[in-house]
Structure formats: structure tokens, C-alpha cells
Image (cartoon, rainbow, N blue to C red; front, side):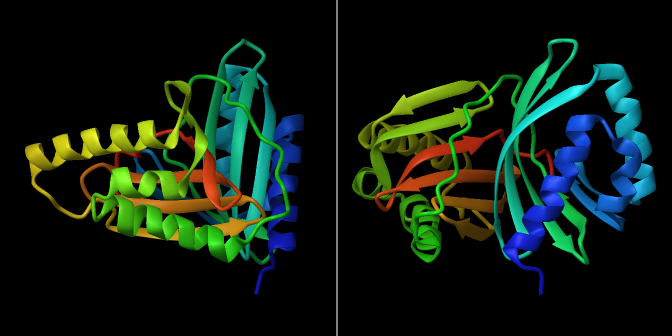
Length: 245
């Protein structure tokens, strides 16, 4: 069984290569079969194929410099990253990886934001199981039962910072609950009241929790949160994929 420490070693090696533009060594880090769940769908490539693909993309965009924050739960790692090209382009995203046999064998990436998010230093203090339960309540009770006004103040901190595809926003718990209630009520009126999240997997370590999830109507996504004093205080979300993984 792959431990969180082993998973992070592989992820760090991947980004060390990326930071040096050392793409010829991709096959040493990515498995012979590398499953990629991407905004347009799912495909499988070999390490050699993906190495050639990245080299071609980088030759067009210019060398990328990476900043990132990572945590792992068993064989799954979540990375919140910022990439900057020598041509001045910037993008940010959340990505999850699965490691087996000392290599990356699967990844989930639902999209990228055309801006630089803030990264917050990872804190090892935290209760991963409590964070997972917090996220389950967020989905199963607040979203699925439409209890936004009641539960947003219980699950969100007094200040909740949201890093999204169109920028970063700070709201209080009540404002966030009102925003969600309005958006979901409009969806229910338009499409009928159906289950919003059709499947998800939750992972946590320290003060971080992450999810790989699917909504039948909107697509799949990857998201991470930061937990403080038992509540969500920060979130990173680049958007929905155009496919259900």
C-alpha cells in the first residue's frame, strides 16, 4: 500500500522535473499507463507519449515556472498550483494524482483559471477525519437537503475566501449561504429538484481536505479546502470539466 509520504515524494519529483523543464525524464515519474481525467474527458497515455506531448506544448508557451502546495492521503495527492510562462501567461488550478509502484498512474484535472491564486502554507495540525465529515455534511446535508441558511454558518468560518476561475472573493458565512440558496433555487426551478452531486471521494491531511466529484448535469471537478477551527475558511476551485469522469 502506498503511503502519503511515498505519494508526495513522487509528486515532488514530478514538479522538480517540471520546474527545470526536464520533460525527457517524464517516463521515470509517470507510469507506462497514465490515466488522465481532463476537462474534455478521460484518456490513457504512456510516459513516453506524455513526455513528447508536454515538450511540444511548452515549446509553444515558453518555459513554465511552478509554485504549488500539496498534501496526500494514502496513494492520492492534491496539488494547488500556479504556472507562469516566460511569455507572461499565468494560470492556476487544482489537480489530484494517484501513485502506484513509485509512479504517477492517474490524474484528475477539471480546468485552469487564467490568473494567479494565492497559496496558503499547509498546516499539519488538523483532524483529517473531522474534515472529511465536514465535507460530507457540506454536500449531503447543506446541498442535498437545501439547508443553506441553517448550515452555512455551522460549516463556514466567519470569513470564507474563495479562489475561483474568475478571481478571489471573500464572503461571510451568511452571504455564502444566501448565494448558494439563490443559485440552487434557480436551478431547481429550471431543471427540477434532483441530486446535485452524483458521486464523490474525499481525502484529507492536516488542515486540508480535497474532493474528486461528479455532478451529472455540470460535469466532474477537483476542489480543495482549508479548515480552521473545524470550519471551512478557504477554497480553491477552477471549474467543472466538460465531461463526467
